[in-house]
Image 1 (cartoon, rainbow, N blue to C red):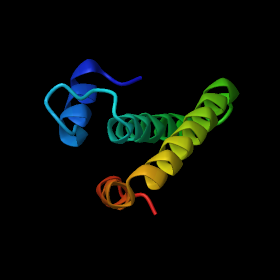
Image 2: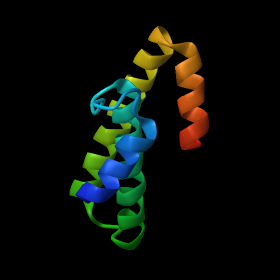
Image 3: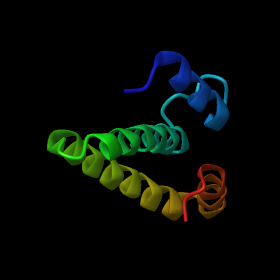
Image 4: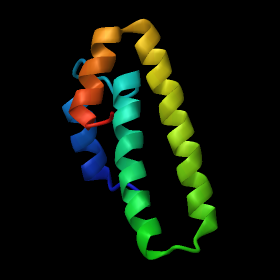
Length: 87
């Protein structure tokens, strides 16, 4: 679970304009942050299968958003991957 302040920092870092909170880039950044936190949780709680399922759903959702972004904005997609250190 992301804290409000941490989520605001992630949004601020990746937003396109001042009131942007739901663009594809912001959504991918938030999902990536949540995935990282949940991955850390699962390293210590190996038998938490409910959280593992949630992690898999978030990874699939992020992949879908990234495919959409790649179709619509190749340069933005490459920039976002570099910023988030994906691939």
